Length: 95
Image (cartoon, rainbow, N blue to C red):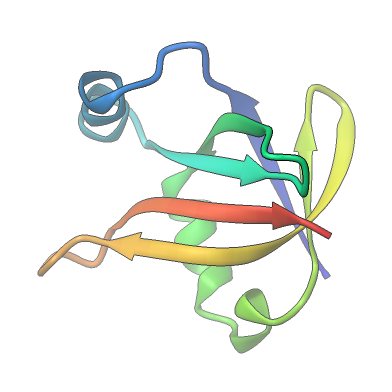
């Protein structure tokens, strides 16, 4: 089981996501639940890149630590940069 520290994002949208990717070592992600609600978060890029190299990252339950609360999620979708080894965005779903 993997554990990732997440930070809740207040700024959303294309411009805010680009600023987050370009000026920090973080990238945007979203956590969806079964009721249509979502939580916008940001994740550390280097830490997540190292975790996703493990095959279990895509299959196993991941624990997101957000504001001291643990949320069990699975990866729904990952968007990657076209030619750089970078993650642009991850969608998680609560299990």
